[in-house]
Image (cartoon, rainbow, N blue to C red; front, side, top):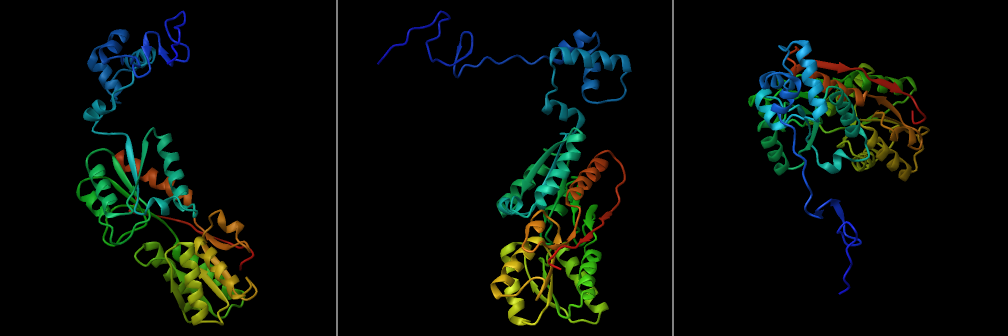
Length: 360
């Protein structure tokens, strides 16, 4: 075995050097400055430094300035665990999405846009975002243990299903909760959009175009969004004296394909369809092409969401736009107000808008 001669500093050629006198695996750790050292540098008591570090407002401004300057000079960073024992706050807030990771990070862009809105607001407030998914019973149990174990200051929910026990459980354990969408009998504040109004505008647009048989592909009926979008469709048809024709999907593209095939088999003379999500509408367009129908010539199609995919469908998709990123931002703002002891409206409804493109 070839020996390598040491260099002038005692290290062999090619040997990883991390610090003088240390080899790989023996990294020298710098000692953290202590609270006492900050107090000594600032010329104040340890108790004063502790009050400044923990955000208390009972410290004179000149003392606060001295402590902050000393902490910056020494590179002092408060120990998070010790600080939370004093403040009873972790400065972390959870966003729980009761779906599988595959669904959360799929191509529909809904959840990433909500997450972006939440993260923007929490970052501006100096808070950490903890993202958790609960696509299985085991995942739900892990989330429950983490959230009620004091690791986060509050919990935001997106994509709620009626049977999900977590929101009610969190409330019973005293964890602040804000939801995207409502649950029956849940007392937590929630943010939603005007599903009914948006869908009525879409269906009325189809009626005004002279479409005579307008079907719908609904979302899941165990979710408030799915129920509300179906209600908007039914109201618009009832107002026009029309008969409702529906098939049920689950907000995914494959379910849109299957539901559209079912509708064409049951109602081959339909000439328009409102689809309760853009992903399902994309699937519906695929099924219509397979059947030889033209869009919008034979069948007009309208979706819901206005994700980026809507503009790139063939033809580009008319859809009901909901402010997805603003949903996330509003979720975070409401949570920050709750944690600050402020009152929060029990429900906040954001507007929707019909965006007309070539499919209708």
